[in-house]
Amino acid sequence: MSTLTNQPTIDTTRPAIPFGREVRVETRKMFDTRGGRWLFIITGLLIVLAMGLTLLVVALNDEVTITASGFSDVMTIPVSILVPIFAILTVSSEWSQRTHLTTFTLQPNRGRVVAAKFVSVTLLAVGTIVLAVALGAVGNVVYGLITDHDAVWNVSGKQLFWTVVLQLVFFWMAFALATLLLNTPATIAVFYVVALILPVMVYPVLSFIFEWARDLLPWVDFNYAAMPLISGENFFGEAVDVGPVEYVRFAFTIFLWVVVPGVLGYLRIQRTEVK
Amino acid sequence: MIEVRNLSKSYGDFRAVDDVSFVCQPGRVTGFLGPNGAGKSTAMRMITGLTRPSSGTATIGGVAYADIPNPAAQVGVLLDASAQHGGRTGREVLTIGARAMGLPAERVDEMLALVGLTPKESKRRVRNYSLGMRQRLGIAHALLGDPRVLILDEPVNGLDPAGIHWMRQLLREYANRGGTVMLSSHLLHEIQIIADDLIVIGHGRIVAMGTKDDLLRTAGSRVRARDNAALVRALEAAGLEASQASDAVTSTATPEQVGLAAAAAGVPLIELREADGAGLEAMFLQLTAEDQRDVIAPEGVQA
Image: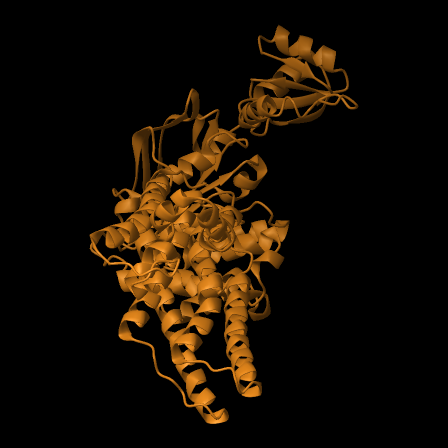
């Protein structure tokens, strides 16, 4: 080993850690734990299962047809349900496993750590949704080959764009809630209640019973807010003239579920004492 | 060099660290000694920029930790060996560190070899590591970037006697090469083995500070006679301080003075030697006892 005496104790002229390196390290940390690896494997299995089941159904039933759009929808389900957990764990596991001691010693600038994780999560969201849509396209080709029906290519650029945007906002919501709560079980629970349970089990009932719910829901739920922008129809199948209000609503849902928890969470991470 | 000036941290009315100032010199191992809850970890977290001081400053080589570019490659830090993701392998923990610091992958193998973790052990998940193995992994992580300064919180905790000996060798060589080492412990005998300089902290304040040799230097004698009461009388007659403690007599006089006085009085001695570090040990015991008063309760009495 070299002698340490000749050099100054601390060299302030050394380069800082490049941001790209931080993003790569944070991405690696999402997959290098036992939990992360299994989550990744299960997501892969679900994608294969979704594709296999869909092809099996259309191959066995002549009267059932599917289009590229349908395939894309089927493939994005496993990706949008399970993969946001990565966006939660990248933040919350640092606190539950107390690895934040090491993380913030490697990079004392906590804002940079949060930024690197955010970029990493965003890349993961875009990467997985593109993969899911591409696999859907492959499924559609196979469908054309193994059935008597022709493959129907009806996915527009606009539809693809909105698929990616919705995937992103759900990932960002998961990430923002994690920074706010800094606790894995709590964040996962809140995320699934807001992203899955309320839209599937509560909102339809509310909007069926109460007139005001139909006006309110597009202000609180991503899907209700985005529907008119994607298809020109609202969630109840009625045609809508898309104007500024529709865009403001969607922006407001992002403000409500991404910006508010994200800003509060960022401040919490900056101020909280790491023990 | 680590320099801490008037460092304080308050939580409400509680002063965890209270106006602490000290310096850790290059080439020396500085032991930070205090009972659990004395403020050692809080002080170390402030030095490494994880906890904001209420007042005062802490610098390393003249720079605050957070202002050091790529700090972990210049200051090796181990704050809590248990604070690792249980689902990662030991090797992966080091790989992440090496990547973040921008070090070559070989560094991971070198450090594993240095701390004595076998390739097989390094592929096990940290969840299955003993505390001693986690300490070795933590030391490996701290040494990854070949830093000039080491800050280690309770690194010997959980190590077996062979491990403590190994740690002493490692830190001794490191300090001999000019490195600065600061390590904490709540056990006097541990730190006595490893450190050159001691900073003793209790209730957030420094209660003693100096070289180990100075602090442990005898301040008197320990002596035994067949008739201890007669010995006390003889010493007092000679104008020396003496007090009977269980089966021995302690005196602030030197062994020479005690021996001469006893011989003059014709009191035969069984044992006569320098009192070993009684001052520091007594002070430390008192500090520890204060914090543990509710633990040392009479048997059968439940809180």
